[in-house]
Image (cartoon, rainbow, N blue to C red; front, side):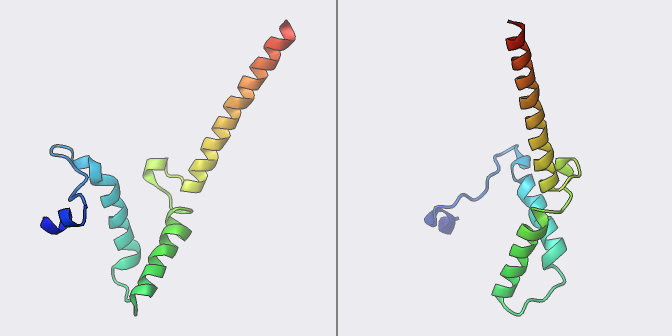
Amino acid sequence: MNKVKEYGWKQSFSRVGKPGDNSWSESFFSILKKEIVHWRFYKTRESARQAIFEYIEGFYNQDRLQKRLGYLSPIQFLNSQQKNVLRRVDRGNLALSLSRNRT
């Protein structure tokens, strides 16, 4: 515990009675270990680091379907959110132009 304080780290993000605070990171690291770390051998730390980076940036953040996003990939989710925002803006502009035409 002294080393943790010495480095200025917090031991945990969780508070007493709030076990869900770390659930997102525990879920992510569990998936990462299952899909890219366990049962693989990397000759160097650099090759392991590169494989993990490629997994996160090339697959996890781009293509992997995620339950919390309604079983969409992050890219699909962002695109759907952007379309929803654009639809709301278009409706707002339409309502504004209709109200201007009435006056």
